[in-house]
Length: 279
Image (cartoon, rainbow, N blue to C red; front, side, top):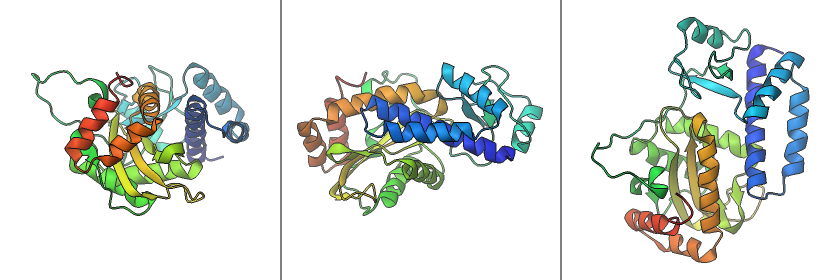
């Protein structure tokens, strides 16, 4: 197996493992299907790489991480230029000298860009740590899943929370192709992992008419939380997901979100509703 294929294989396997973790967390009914896929992909790895990967995953789910501007995206170590070039050449597997995770290189990674904040600004709490009123779209214009993702990603780019909205959408669509992130009660939690350079970020879009987020189902999705996840923020993501799920499993909470027609009011509703569940 060519090393590029091995790395792509590892990334796909890791994605499946993260999806399984999320499914288990949310009480999903697709665990057996995911377990079978994970076992099958694992057995296809070369024995030495399989051993290294499984050892790393016993410590932490994220075992394969991208290089972001010459830095390991997990531990923050600035890597020697020679190592970066070797990783880019994809002739063999290279671990980070510090955290030992398997490194890979992407030519044009989608990058988050932190917005400037005043040093005297009050500390952010709750959902304010991950979102802002600028990222609220109370009336999505999109009629389908991919258009909705692009509308939300473009809003994040416009407000300077991320760059390369189109690449972020490509990442999210690839994730949706594995297993849809739409859940019961007309909600979906699409996300793009490995978007380095910024923090965990959430944009919220409301579709009054509803969108068929999963093309295989007739159910309509009305509430879409599009989440951007840097590699180092995976643990925070699960906590954020838990808070959003706990809040909006309640019918009354969902109705309050969908009733708002202005970004500022939608933002105030989101902050108020998640005050107890997202710390």
